[in-house]
Structures are given as structure tokens and as C-alpha cells.
Length: 243
Length: 112
Image (cartoon, rainbow over all chains, first blue to last red; front, side):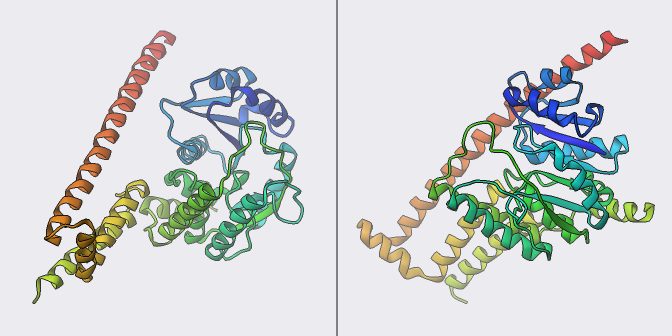
């Protein structure tokens, strides 16, 4: 199993994040995808003992995870955990995620479902709840935190995502759920607790929240009419035959 | 057949082309919004000619068709500007990627 940490200019937090991650996962099975950082992100990750893949230019979280899935498929990993480099996610929930993989192909760690106790503004919460509700319709299961970046992908999902992972800015989280569902993969969620963001507080004005929601809805609509790339379909069939 | 029907048909063809391109991942979402907007505006304006006349009247333009030409020309200029900026950015990124690949090839040659 591989832990993938997409990181853009996370030099300040990454050292501590990798240190805590090491308690749950040997760092040689951790890959930091440095997405064109201009700071010391890559050097810090390498010195901590993690594998590092550096993008020459900034391509966004979706492309970083795409690289991680391609790396995982090549290196023969059968599951990939996405874990943010800013200290928001907690390594003690990794075993729970792995266990949840028994009955699903893609498990999303949710900070809003009953087990979690994440504090956030009312506006932000209602935006996330609305997005989660719409995504749930596509995924045919109840999701409460569709945009969460703390998630695990099983063997079939890794095969699909290595061929194709959504790259639209900020839309990769929800679009990947729709893609997985349309490929007949099972999506589930697991309550987790998360830390407050270590970096700056995300600003959320009403206008920005509306634009953000509109974009996500547009991406969801698009994802449902888009053809699944043939390569991704083939990868899933191959993974099923192998299983 | 009236010219209005022809205009509506052309606008609908544009919208369909945009949707088909989106569906097959050829047209990225970032540029799709502007094209869907242009196609919808074309459909509305051709299906409802009174709207163009009303806006022309508001601006004091005698011939509504002139407003259409000026407006469309302006939108095309803006689109062209966006494409130029994107091209400049892409060239810059390509240069950086080529430089990085070249540097890493040299490093891996040293390792051997």
C-alpha cells in the first residue's frame, strides 16, 4: 500500500506531517508529489526518507494524484491513500481506511459524518453539505464530505485512476467519485477527525462560495455526460480478471 | 425558410459541437464556459430578435445589426486575447519543462 502526499509549497508543515505519518506507514512506501513547488518541499521530503516525484511546473492536485496513481500502478502497489501535506489529516485513521477497503473500492474519510468533530464556518459547511448531497445522488450512497482529500483507493480504483484521473482545478475530488461510480466501483465513506488547517485560514465570502459551488455542480454535470476514457474502462476489466 | 431559422440552426449546431467536444475530453472545462455562453447568447439573440432591437434602441443605435457586429467583434477580440495569453503561458511552461528534462539527463549521465 502506498501513501501519496500531493504537496505545493508545504515546506513549513511537511516535515512534521511526514514525522507523524511515519508512525502509521514506513516512509519508503510514502511518495510526496511535489507539484512544482518553489520552496524546499522536495528536499525536506527526501531528507525525511520519503520518495519524491517532482513536477517541473504546477499542474494542480488532480494531476499530482494522477502521477501518484501511475507511479503506484507501475510499482505494483494495490492501494493508494491520499494524504494532504498541510497537517489536516491524521495518520491514526489510516488503519481504519485500510479496513474499510474490504467492502468498497473507494473510501472517503469524512469530517462531517457523525464520528467527526470538525469546526468550520456555517457558510462553508452548508456549501459542503449541498455538494455532498448532489454527489451522493451520483454515487448512490450517502456521502457527507465529497470534497475530502483523505481517501483510499483499492486495486480496481487504482487501475482505473492510473489510466485516467480528473484534473479540473478543485474538481478532482468529486469528479473522481463520479468516474469510479460510472465504472461500477463501490464508493463508501468513513467518519474521521481532522485537524484545523495548519496554514492560513481559507477565506470564504458568499460570492466565492457561490462561484465554487457553481463550478463543482458544472463539473458534476459534465462528469455525468462525459465518456469514460476507453483506457480506463479496459484497466478496470483487466483488474477484475486479475482478481 | 426564414433567415431567423437559419440563425437559430447555426447557433444550435455550435452548442452541440461544444457539448460533443466536452464529452470526449477534447475541450477542457475552463474554456467550455465561455463557448457555452457564446452559443446560448447566439440562440437567445436569434430566437428573439426584439431583444437586439431593444438594446440598440437603448444605446441609440439606428441599425440593430450594427450592435451585433460591434458586440461580436469585441467578444472575438477578447477571446483572441485569452488565447494569446494562454499560448504565452504554455510556451513559458514548455521552456521550463524542457530545461528540467535536459538538466536531469545530464545528472543521470553523471551517475553512470
